[in-house]
Amino acid sequence: MSQPNAMPTAIRSIAKTGVLEIDWDDDSQSVLSHEYLRVTCPCADCTGHTPDQAKVIVGKQDVRATLVELVGNYAIRIVFDDGHSTGIYTFEKLYRDMK
Image (cartoon, rainbow, N blue to C red):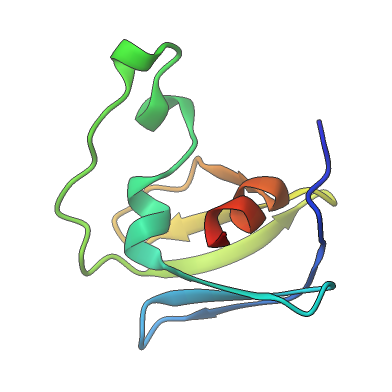
């Protein structure tokens, strides 16, 4: 697995505004909405094993992350208030998504 251009120094989930803020060690910051993270979930249930199996996730405008936890030194897992919790968001993906 390739490493991102930067590593997070702080990760904050803000339920009130529905955003995940990530400070990176290159002094950049990501601000990603909980809705965006939910509808772009990288898990096999959402993306499928092939492109034709991918689902279009809708109706998540008010979804909130209830838990964000580290997965090793390369990713986070997010638990959403709609019960979804199987996506592993790599730092590489999160960094790339802010660009």
